[in-house]
Amino acid sequence: MMIVNINLSDSFCELIKNLQNLPEIPAYLLFQPKIIIFTSEGVWKKAGEWSGEMASLLSCSPLCEGMGEEIKLGLVVAEFNRDITYAMEIVAKEHAEFLGAKVTGVIRVPGVFDAPIAIKEMLQTDVDAVVAIGCVIEGETEHDEIVAQHAARKIMDLSLEYGKPVTLGISGPGMGRLAAHQRIDYAKRAVEAAVKLVRRLRAFREQHS
Image (cartoon, rainbow, N blue to C red; front, side, top):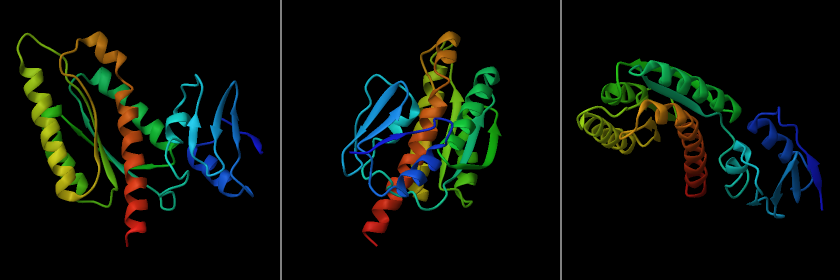
């Protein structure tokens, strides 16, 4: 059995590189004060009560699937409710760096409804995935539902059309401003989903090429 202490200041990419250099996959990785447990094959099994990003990131099997090439992300950020989407944009960039991905471009659009055309433009570049970031706050009419539903559907269509992940870091509809502030981490979840999906699609394509 191996027990390895991990420096939490390391990025996820640095962590994986360090693990790859070990003679065997450790049985335990100690993230003070919590413990993440691995089997001998490197499959994440348990993270106790620890709620950090690393627990969910290491939930894939095998541990290093699709880790070879750098991941390029594009961000499309809605400016409406900018006090909230600005924070979401910052969170998204920080989390991308933490995961070892690179944000190669950002397009800011007036609102969520305007995002699809910018996403389409971004998908025609060399990015591996696009993260859509926005915030749709409830008003006196059902306008928020129309905006969110139509934007989400078109975003999904673009992902399928170009064969690249487009993840939804858009909060709402049906929420007030307080709830919107509480859901800023939707941007982080969307970045994480984009990175995971790119890596797993790469691994799948490599296995079937």
